[in-house]
Length: 160
Ligand SMILES: [Zn+2]
Image 1 (cartoon, rainbow, N blue to C red):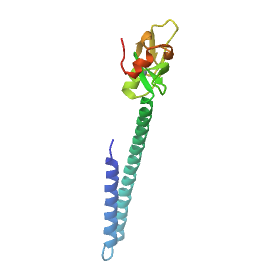
Image 2 (image 1 turned 90 degrees about the vertical axis):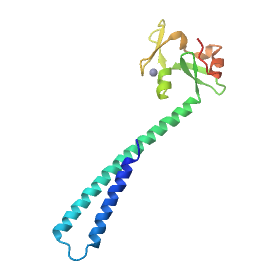
Image 3 (image 1 turned 60 degrees about the vertical axis):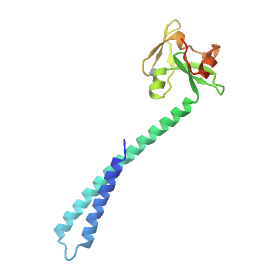
Image 4 (image 1 turned 120 degrees about the horizontal axis):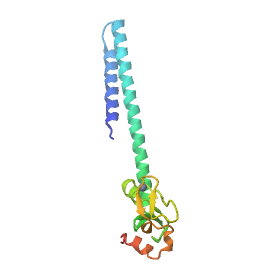
């Protein structure tokens, strides 16, 4: 992603301006046919510039979405911490609570998806988004009920 299409649009508008300048400074009688030809050239040039501007607008919108996603990820980063193999929301004291989020999705995309357990006796938790599987005992639900959790998050160390 870049600003190539904005540059292209500027170049095309400049080309159109050159055409208009030539037309306006044409001395003597300009043949009607020649005028029509130049007008057609001008229309084509302006249409290209319009396309290039639409492309740059789409690029800018995509960049705005990326910025919004990154801002959201930054905000989330301050409120989640790793415990064992999962990520959990933390309170203002850094104490984790609630159910685990997928570590793969968080580390790869900075997006939070809850891990789920297919049934009460299952030995794994699964991410519905990326299908990653984790040992259930290392991604416990209701983490606030585990006493060492606050320590682990405070030191950002996964423990075996
Ligand atoms: Zn995932």
